[in-house]
Image (cartoon, rainbow, N blue to C red; front, side, top):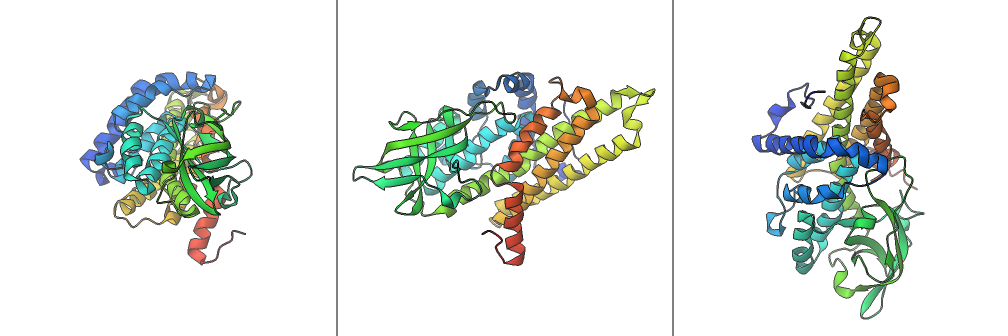
Length: 389
């Protein structure tokens, strides 16, 4: 297989600035050189490629749309999206790491943290020196985060946290967790540092999906948090949900990267695989599958490009993010399945990447709001009637 050229049937490159293309291409080359040669082995061994984190920090890929003042790259949201696209072309686990670090840890510290919290944490998280995680989902509360049971109690000198979080990306390797808990019935954000007595983060093992990613539980048993570790600007569940909007934005772009990887692999394979004395690309059924893939990638590209421009203008609505996340992840998963289909028996081999992407995308379809939850978010926006119980 030759070098990845990207997928651009509608000359969408002409709508990007030189800087946006340069950022995308530099990440594309890095993924080609540093990620693709090692990612399959890490996936098979269920290990996150931790050695890549300092490189990501050095390239400015962590929290890259946040201000330079705090050690971040301060690029626009389209360029940020293109970074997520290229990272997920490598592996969903790698994009998940960057999404969590930037959108779910750095973003809430930047938005609701004290100046002291910002100055301490943001440069360290941007460089990859420190790693963060985001604790919202609980064992019994996934789609309904408002039902959370984790509580914080004011003990005079500290806050005492009790409860548990589940399916937390980066949990076991994180230096700091942004944890959401009810204080006097109001959801607030807290910074819980690794090593705090009463805090543990056991890793969740034996996954069929996102194997090259660390997924953990977070457990709090009479965990004492210093008073200065509350995020002072937080005042309800809406704060946690707005972090999810940031992460879902990156996912909508990222899913396209996985889809492009699968389409590119299937197209190349179909042109070189000979059956009945001709390449299988010459058969109508194969062309039908390839055209579906290209069709949905192209639609998805136009969706996220406009979404990114709206975000940069401050006009983006969270329901628009739901539409893009829902659409792009759904079709990326279908594309991965079709690519596996075109590769036939070879598709299950680790020599090819489509099945790894397919398994990863099963999780991406579920996390940060399931496909059905995003359907209801868009449904409420267009009808004015909430279908949530």
